[in-house]
Length: 141
Ligand SMILES: Cc1cc2nc3c(=O)[nH]c(=O)nc-3n(C[C@H](O)[C@H](O)[C@H](O)COP(=O)(O)O)c2cc1C
Image (cartoon, rainbow, N blue to C red):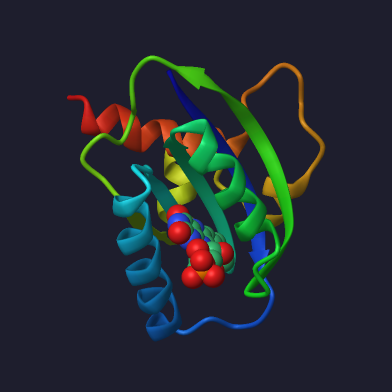
């Protein structure tokens, strides 16, 4: 079984495209070594990340990520175990999303990043998880 988690967070300062590229190089190199796969979405200064892999690697990584000074307000959205991976071929897939793209996927014209940090509505799935799922669905077509 593998463990998965997803969280949202806000960047602590304005990250340039170079900052994000450097972050992705670290993620991908280390994740390959640690048998971790997943996806990182960057939307208007916020991160939504899905991580999956051996529990003994996921737990310390999430601990490290939570303390990373490049972002703050880390909120865990979901965690669990699964018999199969969603992002098998991706050491860290990445998508920088615009407001119109995000709004289209979520079907909410005026969707804004603050909506990612609102208390959870028990009747609907968290928008961060819906975004991740839309990419998972595309991968499996
Ligand atoms: C939004 C965000 C996502 C991150 N994702 C990962 C990741 O998937 N894998 C990873 O190894 N580090 C990730 N990091 C970086 C870790 O926080 C940490 O800096 C990195 O693992 C280097 O650790 P080291 O001190 O062991 O070299 C992420 C950082 C941020 C801010």
